[in-house]
Image 1 (cartoon, rainbow, N blue to C red):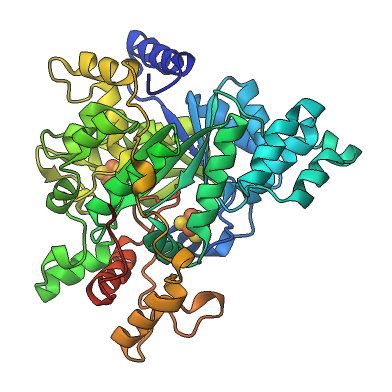
Image 2 (image 1 turned 180 degrees about the horizontal axis):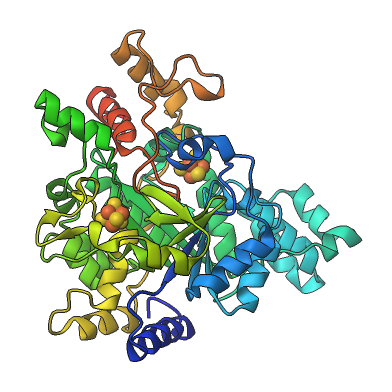
Length: 483
Ligand code: SF4
Ligand code: SF4
């Protein structure tokens, strides 16, 4: 099974209950953003821009838990910002578990090992020694850290921690192999840290998923290699979604200047081309979601947006109409359901009800449509059932052959080589490397909107631009592909 049985049953029960009650709209996954602060400043991240004036604000713990009760989604995806910065993250996870919910912690991976060391320190017993020895041997913790775990004082032992559970997934943001990923997150070593965190989590018995956003310039062969590698690491599942930047201003510019929208957008046509192999990937790897959504991504059918099924709650309230677009914030989920004119959004029979929706095929708008049967075709239920309840694909045995560490680890980090390429290309113009003490500034500062790579949204064109420059200029020896 792609999902533990208890979790699949919980979600199935939730859908069946609402079908019986004929509830017109209900929540499947809550995107909970307790804060928008982050330790990274990824190229094009929408959240740290859209909410730049409220980066220091946080949703109080009680309000986070109340939001989950309010919409009653069986799954809660804790995102942000970086949720592991949220001071009450452990209490939040515990509170959501007490409510019986399935939890995803959408993280950039940088603080995961710290959180897992805290868990080990709080629960240390002598029988953990072989595990500690393995972690040290695989360089996932140091000898000193192992000692700190053994000698944890009362405060470390009493600290609330995040324990392994079949009800909880670390959901690690990975947008490619090392070179690409570090480039996008604008920090060398992040991919390496993510891999170390995934390895440590698997040894400790946590469930781990990854989430990946596909951009206009994403190399699909690299994505397949990434899945091979992650599968070999025994990652439990992958979420993949097209990035999307609806920026109406750009659309308007395209109209007025007569430029091809393909210069700016990951259009539906381009998305379908990028996702032409999604069904084959679904057979090879544990891709989460429904096969119906995969057919939609591959261009084999249409679906209607059900953004209300994956609502977002953050420091400003319930964000409508969806994770990407903000036309307003509401006080309660019900208020949002009742007051938003949902019929004004999405694409129906190829016609965009809102121009901003025209090219959107993102997971948060359409994956639930596949599960809820909004555009039901004969056999869909069986397809969805079979996909999720049949045995999941085995880990990819040859995954270790993928040259995953093709950047920072071999001296080709983005600051060393890619930055030089971009700076050469821009010849003194502004690039995306201004932040963090680098020498030039971002090429465009389009406000937020786009597919969430680590659950955060992003300006996809900005990332595309960066990736395109690297792809077209970098020495061929910088491998995007492997094997
Ligand atoms: S994309 Fe995610 S990790 Fe990157 S800056 Fe935004 S919130 Fe942080
Ligand atoms: S189609 Fe996309 S952009 Fe439009 S409301 Fe749905 S999820 Fe949001």
